[in-house]
Every structure is written in C-alpha cells, then in structure tokens.
Length: 274
Image (cartoon, rainbow, N blue to C red):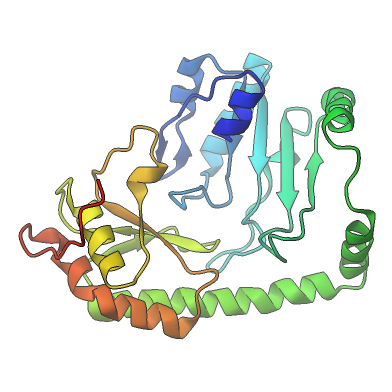
C-alpha cells in the first residue's frame, strides 16, 4: 500500500493500532482524508476492529469528507466467531470495499473487485481504463460459474476446516514446546502473532536467526512496523500454506529458542546477517 500511495503522488502516514484496532484519534491528528484498514483481521496484528472503533471511523470519514478503503481479504476465513460485518454496510458513501480471490482460491488468479461510493465510480473507471485495458474474460467467467453453482461456497467451507486444523496444530505445538509464548490474532485469517516472553529488544532477531539456522523460516514483527522497532519482541506466524505435520515439526525444532527468549544468554542465534 505504501508503494501504491507513493506512485499516486501521495504520502502514506502510519497510524497506531491497539487491541481494538486502528486508533481513530491518532488518525484524526494526521489530517489524512483516506485510510486503508483490514477490519476483519488486521494485518499484521490480527486484531478485529471493535464496534465502537468502527463507528468512530465512519464518523471521522463523514466529518472529514474522507474515505475508508476496506481490505476485506480475510473475512471468509473465521474460526472462533461469526463473520464480522463489513464497514461498507455502515456507510456505502464513505467506504471503498476491495476484495480478491488470491487468498481464497489462488494467487495466480489475479481477479479482484471494488465496491465503491457512487461519487467515485467515474474517476475509478477512468483510471482503470488508462492503466489496464481489460481483465481476463475467461477467468472472470469461470469464477462467476463457480460462484453461481455454489461450488465456491463449498470450497470455502472445506478450506475453513483445513486452515482451522493447521491453526490447531500451531496452538498445540506451541503449548507443548514453548508454553511461555502467547498467541493472539487467531480468530481469523492465515497467521497469528506470537508474543515472545520478556522485553529484550534483541530477542526477536535472535530467535529468527536461530530458527533459520535450523531451516525453520520465521518472520519478526519488526519488519512490519513503520519504525522497525524490535520491542516488544513478536513473531508473525503464517500457517496458511504449511501442512499440519510441518507446523508441528517446525515448532518442535525451535521450541527451546522460543522458550529461551525470556532468559537473555540462552538464545541460540544463527550467523550475523547484518
């Protein structure tokens, strides 16, 4: 999104996110007139935008004559609760809802869509005409047939079961090998956030490097933060394209690294890549 904003001649401004979602007061202070949010399962923290924050966000957009771009990519994959309603349903004149099948079907199927306010239809259509002469017709027809036949819904139900089993494998493996690690963001999507014990600013990188030295790929939360802060130490654990056996074996391989994050000096780090 940052690259897209820059290409459009805009400036992307980071806004803090807490356990209830985007901080609308902080957003107000930026003076921005557009914001991109992932309310169903915020990337990368995994939090769900709280009802009061949803209303505050709509009020902000109305008051500022601004727009909310709602990226609803994880809405179909919820496990612990009923699907969360879309922001677009609260303010159709202020919310641009965007979706894609790159997560639900395959990344190679490059089909997405916009549900935009009527006031934006003409400029968006003109922009697409200038930048993209047309989307693949056969792919769109195949997707339409998949949806109309009910097979797309059956696919989503089947994949929810598959992803839920992988999520359970992750939770079970961490409970067995690193019970000190707390997981959040598990209600939806394909990733969770692991909160490493302690506050050591070097813990995150040490665990990531140590795991890669053992052929286990991990990603630190710091690379997703606008200021690249390494504290508090957290990991973004994706389970969408990793089988249950691989998840279990991977966590078992690095369990001592994860558990040792609370005790400086016990971390096993890989080679220095700085």
